[in-house]
Length: 364
Image (cartoon, rainbow, N blue to C red; front, side, top):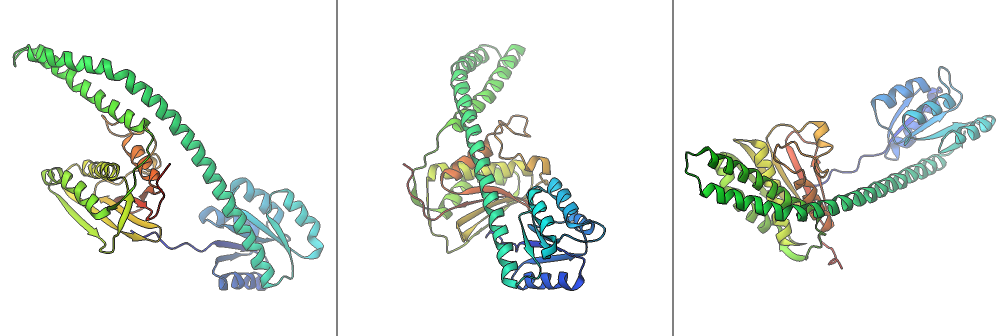
């Protein structure tokens, strides 16, 4: 599914002079902004409570709630909101005071269209750079945390492997030495069953602790998806699932590690099939977008609650009784190692969306 078009920045204009308020709104709207205009700070706070704005342009001298009072309240409740003061020359001292309370800038009345757009443009650019900086900081923290978790997981898994092998061999030995009706055989089988659960968890820990350096080769994305669907065909048939596919004919070869990508797609398909828990619809879509190619894997199963959606890609977070919570975390690491990204789309049906670039240098 192609990415949606960028949303125009939203600007809130606050001024008690109707003519001036409408003029500012018209100038900004003509330049591609989405604008709402209100008459004082109190009404502006109500707007901020129900809608999101990137920039607020506010007069200083207004009835009910003046610009300075509005600024102080808004910056406490919406710290990333940028506010530009509009003032006549007589209010310059108030504007300077407003800067000390977190206003981005001030612009003196009367001002030209060019001056207004330049100030708003600089404000949006500063906001964009600040958001990028926060994103980079969050990614660095996330990567450091994942690296630490990976090290612990790898150490734990390797320490568990030998004892688990011994437990499983002993359970299999005991199982073979008791007749079918002997309850001791059932005990041995229970030990074996739980041992296999721990074995799968150990396998996931080791996969999660790996450093993913994909061997990139031009591969047919449609072929990768069809291979993964063939492997899932028996489960699809067993649950009487309706499979729908839509692969754009213009799909070209994509640089990827085929083995890793088949593994990721297979996990996402298994996840979707398990989420259905019976009959339903499984949909796989793929096509080009402006950043490369995309793949959507959707199912008609139950809606994922918001508190779960927020944590889906966190390592060790799971809602499954026997899950490790590492499947989606591993899928994200593999896709990001290819220069792509994965997310859960905000759609009525549960849809995992990942994208891959068409050009990428082989990692060193």
